Image 1: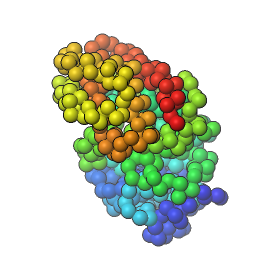
Image 2: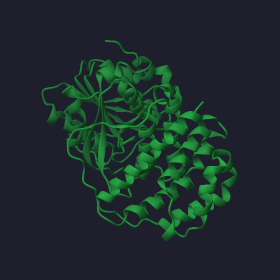
Image 3: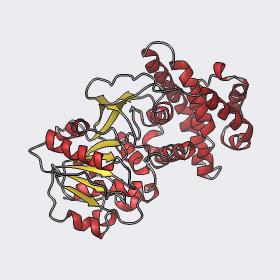
Image 4: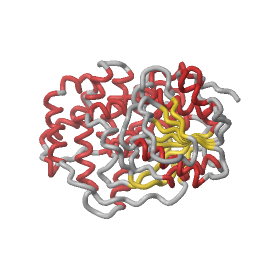
Length: 406
């Protein structure tokens, strides 16, 4: 079987040795563990139980990819659990590539990728992720989580609407922490040397999604429960989190320009199962602090913003600096223009890229404060309406983005 990704290029000698005698396999659950987290043993156990319960007649294994793969659940494993250290430094992207390449090497028909920090992962989720691939419905499976309106706002207000406008597909999760891939999809992936710019952070996962959205691949969403991360798995530095995720999406826009520049509008992806319930708010959201961060950004970062955004965008931001938290509004069309201005400035390298991306943080916080004000009162349908308005605003901004992307 062809192995374009190159398992020898991705796995170190120890990882290659661990695969000897393991295959061929039909199913693989690759647990991505670039560093140790407390939830790792439970995720391994859930993945193994999910394979054994949902697919008892199929040969399967759990592969633990990354430098944090020493953790093991107690007791006997229902399926083999094998640690496969990637070659080189223990980076997240390396671990993802190691899991995909090892699964391909073992001839697996379907591969689930699961973040070791996804503390809410349960065996039933593995069944939902892999079943559409096993029955031939999907090449790429992505989750839809049950969330409160104030959760996942980086995805709902930035990553998902931008991906919708750029790539023309309405996916709810852009970096969801778990996914599933078909053998037909993975065998068409570029070789290992073509991924070197994405080995740190979430770049590999972002690019896998965009490979699915821009190719002739069947993408399916499956509803899961609430998403809960191990506290030790997530950084508390919002600017770093935003720079990692948004930078990864901007880089795909550069790599896949020919695939998206002339696209207009969007279409939903197939969803298998009923949409998850909207959860009640889980705690107090300090909109006053978010608005204060926006005001400070307008004061302290204006010289940076002036290099990123044209005057017509800035003129729409200045009045927002006069609004108190209770009256603060950041309209979706203005927000969409801001994000697209940052994308163009990133593409043109007007500033050091990390510096530019971090300068987006106060603007993002202002948008979240406004979004929370919109959806915290009214029926649940109000949340879906507000998110659809954001998606349409980004789509309306797409022609200008395409015209400026040279």
